[in-house]
Image (cartoon, rainbow, N blue to C red; front, top):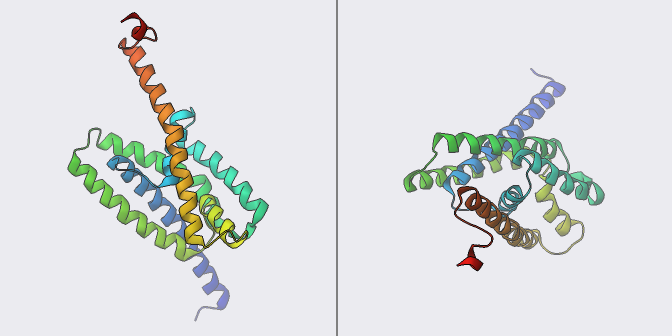
Length: 204
C-alpha cells in the first residue's frame, strides 16, 4: 500500500502533466484556428495584431506581453500565480508559433473544407485543453488573472461580466493595432512589386 507522501507526489505529477498537456493542446488548437482563418479569441487577436506591427517573433512577443500582465498579478493578487502561470507564460506562445508554421506549411493554400475542418478541430481541442488546465488548478494565465483580480479583488463586478468587458477591450485594440499594420505591410508589398507609388494619385 502506498504511503501518503507517495500518493501526494503522484497526484502532483498528474496535475503537472495535465497542466502541460492542456497548455500544449491549447497552443496547437490556436494553430488550427489560425489555419481556419475564421477568427480568434480576443486576446489572441490582440496578439496577432501586435505581431503584425512589432518586428518580434510571436513566441517572444507573447512572453513580453505576459510578463507585463504578470507584473499586474504580482502587484495586486499573487495567489493566482502557479506553475501553470509560468508554463503558460514561457511555452504557449512558442507552441502557437510552431503549430501555426507547421500547419500552414502542411496546407499552404487550404480549401474551404480544410478550413472548416480545422475550425472544428481547433474548437474541440481548445475545450479539451481548457478542461485539463482548469482541472489541474495550478495557476491561471496572466490574461485570465486580470478579470479575476478586477472581479474578486477590486469587486468591479461579477467575473463573467468583467471577463466579457476585458474581451471587449481586447477586440477593438486588436483591430486598431492590426489594421494600420496590415495597410503598411500592403503598401510595402505594392512598392516592392512596383504597383504603387506615393505620388501615383497625384500624377494621375
